Amino acid sequence: MLGPAPRYGTARCAATVRERLPDEGAKARVTALIPPDIVEQVPLDLLGLIAGLPAGTARIPWDGPLVRIIEHDAHAPGHAALLIEEHGVLVAGDMLSDVLIPMLDLNDTADPVENHLAALRLLEDVADDVDVVVPGHGSVGRGDEVRARIGQDRAYVHALRDARAPADPRVGPSATYGRDWLPGVHERQLRHLARSGEPDR
Image (cartoon, rainbow, N blue to C red; front, top):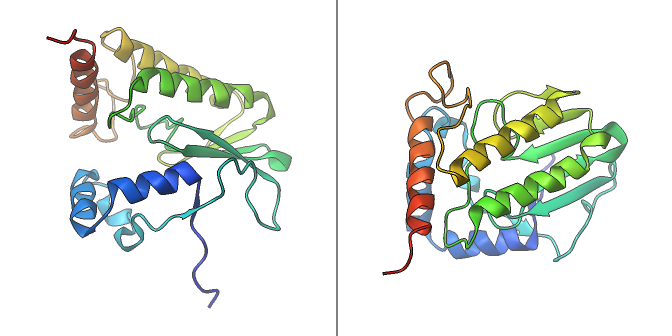
């Protein structure tokens, strides 16, 4: 037995977990939001057990290959991608999926659209060094797929921002994954951004 491994997150990620999952009731509410087709794959007993790295940590503190931390605020505060530089592998977290649309952080965030676009710019900055992208959901992408996925996510976020119907196969009639719940996520994001764009009354 190797024993339990540390489950690292950025300092802001760990702080957000403490804020949003303060008790078992909060965890139960989050559990109810997990899509039904993946809920059995989520280790719910580990939900929220994050060891926060010191603020500003730029690399994973271990003896393995150099892994650069690319921290951003898309999807959740302190979210991060990992770049395994010597192998050209980008572990993208909840970004750059071929089956899921971008899911913005809509929890008391001043500008979730710009947060997501800023994160895509950070990923684009390292794209020339990436041969393989590994998203948290969906399939591995290789070569030109890395930039293609960045472009697809950016186009979707622009459509949300402009309140346009996205030309995105992940939520279109040909979508095969999440057909029973993913369009609902898209509609909730549209409604939220429409409400947040209304002038105060």
